[in-house]
Length: 336
Image 1: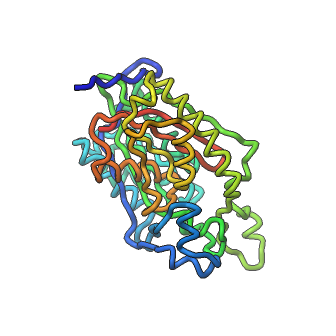
Image 2: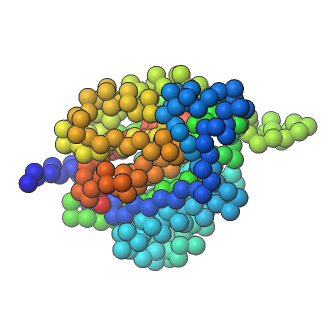
Image 3: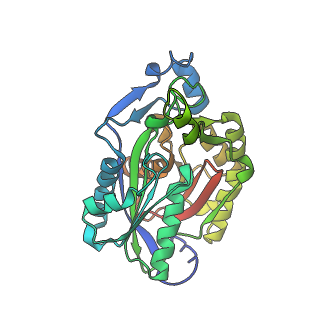
């Protein structure tokens, strides 16, 4: 029996690990065929460019809060922890469209948590991996014992379905993990940062002030410079991933799973080649069925790998996420 390497502990203190994973996928399945006429495209073109076959859009009843609560309840059930034991709730999202208050306190209240610290973070597609690091650091530092980290989006609310560059990419859903104390570290040191020089690569197209000042206000939409994002993510993020592996005190040969942000199948393949991942490493490809769910994409992909039997308890997984900002974060984790 092969002995698995232990992850390096980032800062000392109480080691933290992922104890449970949950996900919620909206009920409405949207095929490529539903979108192609408006963007003068085809199912074949979309699959060649992105690997996406279908995605899911939330119904009116599938709100940010509803989807988050469902994902959190599954994560709690799998971990065997009661909501009343949770003392931190971190929600990563860019599509909770109320400026204030944050949605995290409402999610915590519906779950039955007992007045936890609860807040939202806005790091776009990188938000979930940011949240994992924040929760891990809180547990190691003693300011929390159990923390829920949620990635959730309703990007269909801010999609321009006539935009050939984004209409087929983005989708909705929620994913969550419960993070808690452990005898050994199950969350490696993070590699994170931002590249504000490319702030405009992925952004909200219209400023809210300009929208409201117009004679016919319309919802602001996402826009993306797809080719520029592809070049940046495919190569710069491979270096980030390798650095995260090194900081964790392991090698790519020790990895069991690679779970990147589900932006585009071609980006995933390019990163895997650049990192020279062994053929034994299972690679998450949830984007084909789910689309790009931004902050929800990494937990969605992780959840599917576990459900499909491609990932096992105790496996080492490299998580890496990147998106608007441009923001990024990566860490190696042990699967629950």
